[in-house]
Image (cartoon, helix red, strand yellow):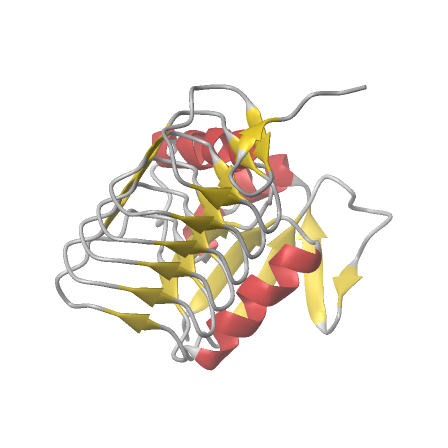
Length: 208
């Protein structure tokens, strides 16, 4: 029996669990700091908090962090790595991933996503539903490419950046670290670290 522990009993966690079931994992159990108030997510049990998982790692053939916040996901994965857990990468059977692409440990590739030849993903990345990462793209650790977003060839994305739903990025563009690209934005020029960009073309977001 293959047993998978998922950290993060949320909407994203349900999507990850659904992908894991499609991949044939026999037993899926969640761990979340909302326990013991939260004891079940859909039909999957929530067995304890994160500390409880650390005490029971030997019970699982695989572990994955399914938390949307990029920094939290990457930090918890690093702690699990330090504890010697069996971190896994999940590729939904409905995704299309080139055999010449490289996927980092703890990443999840969801239904309808496409990753093309010589694309490289760091660890703990999310390539969400129907997103596309074209040839020769380079994504650092903890990147999230949201549903329907598209990265053209040769795009680079820095650590823990978030490309919003339906956004598009022109070929060979460099996106820095800790960047948020707003939903539906069109990126046609490099984006500096640590800022939020919105619009067509994407520009720094200015609060009124």
